[in-house]
Image (cartoon, rainbow, N blue to C red; front, side, top):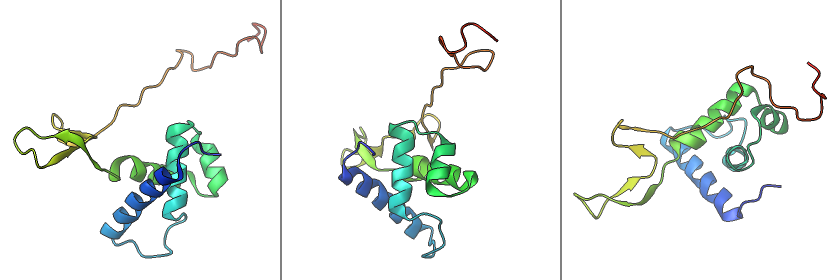
Length: 127
């Protein structure tokens, strides 16, 4: 169960549909419809669902899942509340970096040097 309002899923779905129309994607050519793609992207963002689980749940390949995530992250942009100083009638996209002149985001990961996750008491100190 995805803990997000239905309006949010519909909104992201509409953004994805608009992107497909801009790219002139023909109907029936994608493994998932816009709604299911929106759910996939939101599950990844909100619940941190692993890609392997998203692939299994949607019966798609991992490359398709990566492509769908990329579309959901980078291609669905909405003008945010930031007002431009030089043109107050226009608003800036919240994910646009003026410094780098590109869309961007910051993904942070916590990892250990040996590549193994802390298992706590499960292994009782045995390695």
